[in-house]
Length: 277
Image (cartoon, rainbow, N blue to C red; front, side, top):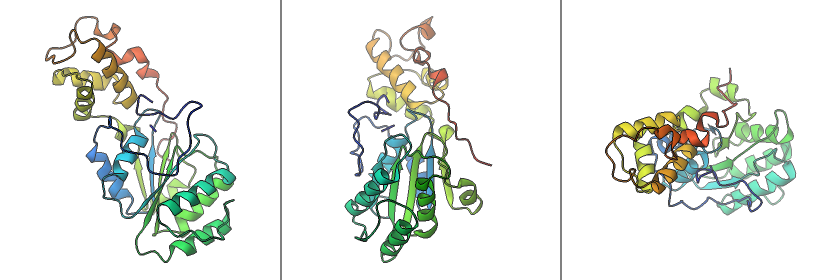
């Protein structure tokens, strides 16, 4: 999931999943963004693009548990590296089956046009859509995986609604879907926490500060979820002034553990996928 705890997927213990993750207890509700996801899945393709720790997965998990999805959600947690057809597509078929979507027994798990045709035919009989979430999806432009995903979006819509969570623009001909009005995009600037969300995150750690301090902290971290979480954890430990404080931070705050700059928020991974032209 998107680290600290907004991203918790790195390490040898990570196991790919084909079910919607449970709602984490530390999640900060973000209705302004779940509303946008609910709107986006009325169309064929939604992409959520941002750096590690931006809260992509947390947002999608929150949305999946709102009860406002247009149909069942099939969730595939990818490996976070270039997806191989022989690995990805069995997971996709398993996730669709777990979500209650009828998967043709003859659907080839290797991907390609035959899989697109089989899934399109199998999903055509459904009365309600099914949402497929590909979390931490990565593949190269023009790869067999990318071409199969593009084929599904083109031919299995409107029954299949695709949500892609990625650290960079997925190579899915986004410009074409954008021009046709069939693409919804949430990017780093959208995922950035606002002051209300920052205050809610701090409150989870028992940190209560003035609005001015909340705003200053949020601006220094650029709204980066992981940086704010790390700062809140540090402020929680420095309870001499942090909890229930309505005053600003003490002199030299930027050099204390309460400052997000300690964690390099200014040099966090940049989003390489800006809006395509």
